[in-house]
Amino acid sequence: MAKVQQRIGRIASLTAGIAALISAFAGPAAAEPLAKVLFGGKALPAATKPASYGFYSKGCFSGGVAIATDGPTWQAMRLSRNRRWGHPTMIALLEKLAGDAVADGWPGLLLGDVSQPRGGPMLTGHASHQIGLDADIWLTPMPDRRLSAAERENMSATSMIRKGALTVDDRLWTPAHAGLLRRAASYPEVERILVHPGIKKKLCDTVTGDRSWLRKIRPFWGHDYHFHVRIGCQAGSPGCKRQDPVPAGEGCDKSLAWWFTEEPWRPNKNPDAPKARDLMTMASLPAECRAVLDAPDPVSEAAVTVGGSSLAAVAAVSAPVAAAPQPPAAAPVAAIAPNAFAPTPDIGVPIPRPRPD
Ligand SMILES: [Zn+2]
Image (cartoon, rainbow, N blue to C red; front, side, top):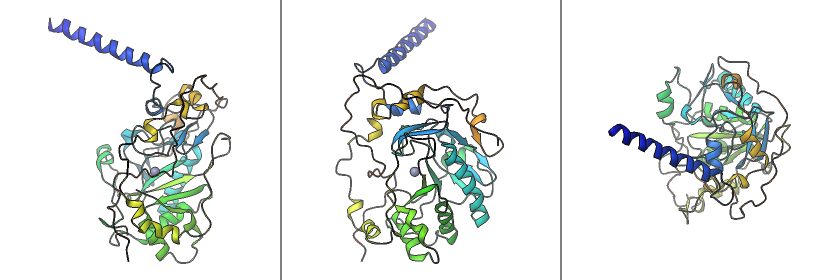
């Protein structure tokens, strides 16, 4: 009897699953599936020519490669998220930065999120990181041993910002941190590096000699545990939407001073408003992203993993992803205006403080 009931239960849950699937794909009449669910469900990249489509906070990419979980000069963190994927230029840059940083005296990189295998919006976290051209790197030096998978899941990064304050904790900040950011900013591919305003201020106050690289270091919410490297649109990606160039100058001026007023830290007036990623359907993304979703998988993850033990890794190259025809009745998405620079602070926003004197 119990067995029969179990079986009935199983059939019922199967039926429910099939019904959910059907309603998810039944077109505009039914609820449109969320893009974050579709992209979040992809385990491997689109095995087509590398190309980014759309904008950092509203797009996808094909031909992605992964950085190996372990290399001589890096260890990837939070492996369960499967966000080690990026445009081949981004992944090559991470590998190069890791080597250069060690040569500079930094003990090695702990790598945070790059992108999902095919990019797109994520179920949790970042508004950007959608087109394979963003990567987070911890400000915590790599330990001199290999971390276990569990440690990579659970180890906390260290905030460089004093608790309840907006300035760097001088017990933690070292010239090597500045050197790492200087090195990351030195590559022509890198257009922006996002850091907590307190870190930017520290650099403004202490960097001597060539200060031109400070221009690329941009203050932003979050980014006290890690910094965020963003490279520009790459060749072969005509559908990639460029970001505005960084303003001229070092950025150690009024634009930085604003971050030390109360205004940027005011509580969100509408904390329950849904985030862009919680609304975006495929109709919100470039048309090519449908083809990116449908593209075949590579033969294996190892075949498209760079660095570490599997060195030879190039995405299978075939024809570029063709633009899929737009659906006839795309739901209006005017209300959604995803913007990489929209205030979507990470967890750990410093406590608002009065303007320092
Ligand atoms: Zn980031």
